[in-house]
Length: 197
Image 1 (cartoon, rainbow, N blue to C red):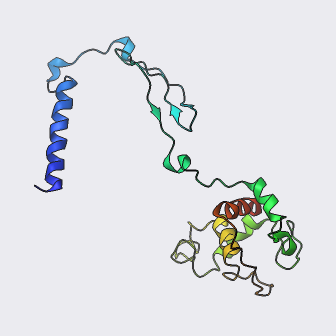
Image 2: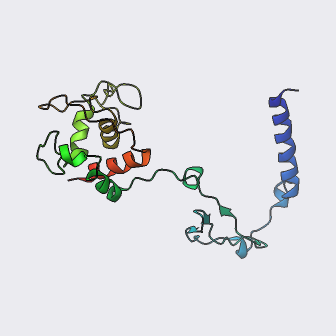
Image 3: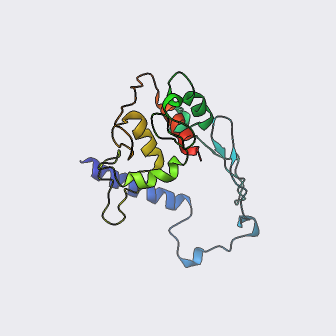
């Protein structure tokens, strides 16, 4: 038998067992008036548990329940997903990496453009880039923007490939390669530069 056929048979069998176990299969004459204990008031929000999971609010169900299930943390959170840290990015920006040697955190030009207000300016620059980093064109027909291409994408792209887009009025001076930057470092730098006003 094929896997699909086995899946269908197993699903039907489990559905039948569940219906019988739950008292299903009867008609309208089997309807039972719910008692007041079965009615549930507005539940409390989930509460965090050690390890990143959440404990569900206490449910008031007929017969009670012995123990509330605990939802495990998402795989990404459990495996240490990258969470951008702008404060750490600020430290990296002024470190030996050398960002602050060419870019000001204001509007002044050093070698490259000042980074204040980058988040707002990125919206206009995005539409001038022929290919968005997530694939496709940065110029969608309807909006002239790739809506998936954010200021954060623009900043990350500029750090990793400084020649992808040259700001008008500036020379095409490539930034140095940063082979020692981790993904976390890049995420932190991006969080910092898009936070500058």
